[in-house]
Length: 184
Image (cartoon, rainbow, N blue to C red; front, side, top):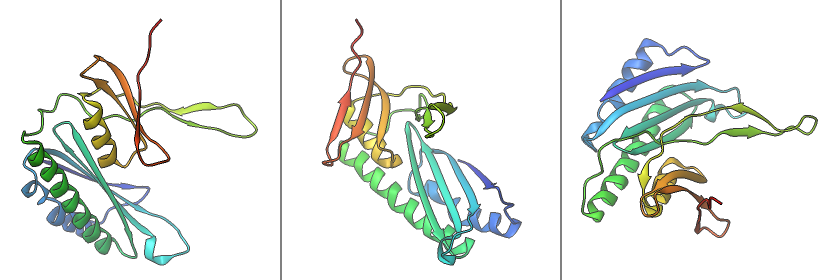
């Protein structure tokens, strides 16, 4: 398991780095297939002093990415909170794998995100960020589960039943929708 610790517009003190390694270096106890753990520290100037320190953890395991973010008044409290949250996510994910009766498929490609577009009233929409990713072959149900684990509102994947791209999204009523392209 590779543990990467970095700061976003802030320096991570060696003591904080060691503390994070102690707390988050044990995550592979909950799921052995973890390959990467990325920890990102940030300091935000907010009105509430209780939410200034932000710690985000992303865990890559086989074809699944799990993400947790916690905010607190100090870095150590935020690390403790995010470690507990990630532990619960890993246990939940492992339980789902166990209920399915099969282990996770080997890691073939990383999960993805789509291009983000920001709109401005004065200027026409423009593409400000481009992300490239490899499509994951999976069923729509697995895509919806992956979307929930990431906390996204949509998820692009390669549908194993139709061998085409598919997009799963969360509807306002709480159900899921599936968009499949039709090529003419």
